[in-house]
Image 1 (cartoon, rainbow, N blue to C red):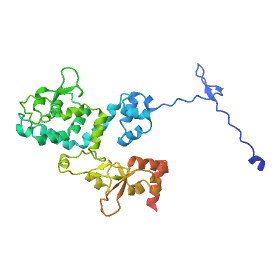
Image 2: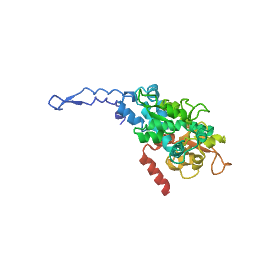
Image 3: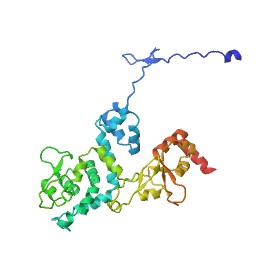
Image 4: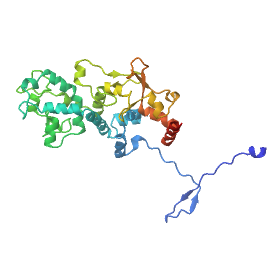
Length: 344
């Protein structure tokens, strides 16, 4: 009836919360509302919990957190909570694992030091300018390996650091995690700054590995990120630098560097480590429409199947997953839509 439709709504009374006495009985109700719990930010979490969370995030998620607010940015960059070095050391392991072949070749080269057992180099070849340039090119990668897993035993020290002449410090701990430059090795090392320094030169200079190892883990991570592929983390090879070969850089609002193999892989079945998503995959795997992707940054790259075709659009995977969650709400909703499209 009209009278019932126009009747005012009654206000609900606050829900009673049980009051527990000293004996543990909660029979006596109370009409007082429970106080709201204070908000806890990222910077208020315990150090152990904060370190566990941040070390599980990838590159895109970490830098997305840095844009949330100033407190989160300071936590990731200024080491206010004391966990920032460990977080970026975890990220440095990605570059070490992706460039294991290059590191193995450097270790084999270092094992041929003049006077060593096996097939040693001559003093001229060991101190050649070209060899010094190659090791200077991979100096950030060598420093990342030292920073991620510093050696503890004598065998590991000899195997991992014979290329840089690092030896356990007997006095005060130096800036390279308890390792300092030995004068005898530094005099004959190939990374000496003086081009004419030989095994008996007696000149001691800081090697590129020492300079990079003394850097902040975040600064070293940025250096390796600029010299590596966005997808596979493989560092640009020295022969690419020698012949002035440039990597493929995407155009558009999302500009990243891709090696040739990763750029061509987008035309075939995608791999699990790929961090970019093509527009076709957005439609097939996440059932997204063009209007769902509006506002997202994307890169433009030459179509690997045919260069005369329209350039392919590459979106960040984290951004695509966010838009897919906004449309389908849950993973079950997305799977139901994929099943419906497969059956029709």
